Image (cartoon, rainbow, N blue to C red; front, side, top):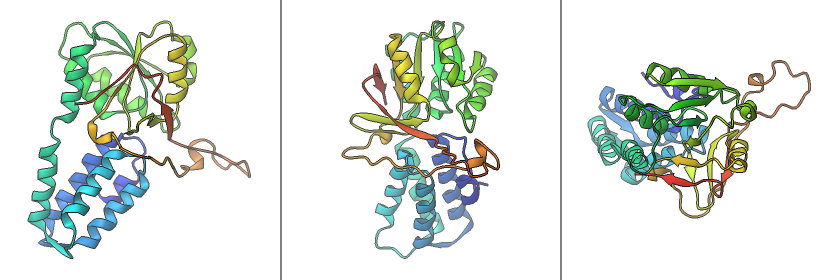
Amino acid sequence: MNSIEEILSDNTSGSGKILNNTITHFLEEGINFEEIPVIKILEETGKISNKFPLFALLHHFSNYLKEHLKGKTTIEGYKLVELIKHYKELYAGTQLHAAEKMLTELTLDKKNILLHSNSSSVKTLFNIISGKKSKPIIWQTVSSPAGEGILQASYLKKSGFTVHLFHEDAISHFITDIDMAIFGSDLISSDFFINKTGTFTLSLFLNHFEKPIYILAEKRKIERGKTTFYETAKANDEIMKNPGGIRVHNFYFEKIPLWPVSKVFTE
């Protein structure tokens, strides 16, 4: 079960997983109810989009539903299921195709690769590689403050990779060991991308040491035109419990310029 409350409280999953959980929620709604008020669907997609305003995949799915529910007051459950299944079919395999495209251009065998945060696109890439004898070595950041990089490190270790886990602030200790970085992205604009806080600092450091940076993402994450960046500060207690008047600033995402990036790979 993927309730709205569970989706809204998820602070460690990437945009791909949040979208999948959102889709599962609405499929369950369609299966369990004969008829659903359209306003309820729009309110729930609105809540999710507002909680994750920087996740382009959620905006894309939300706009798809709005377009196909325009002018309706209710929708039969089975028609909602059909509508969502059609969306899934339209974009099935896009992560896989993007990863395969990257692998046709990059040789990752025995490379030391820096990863930051927890990305379903990156996991898809390494799922393909996991079956090969000659595997890259993973250098995974903790990705504070939520520490979702630990989840990705555990996932990749179970997939058969050698994984080094370290806090992103300690990058200077390992930069000579690292050959390249592969980042996911939540949104890509014409001159910047949005990703986990810490990506900007890592990108500047990698660029200084002439280490290539690659982004792996779906085309749905590319937003044309002007993109406004905004984010609501997260819970203080992830950084400091009982701050006692100290002004705590806790943000998960940031804008990173595209100029340090060697190439963006999509399907």
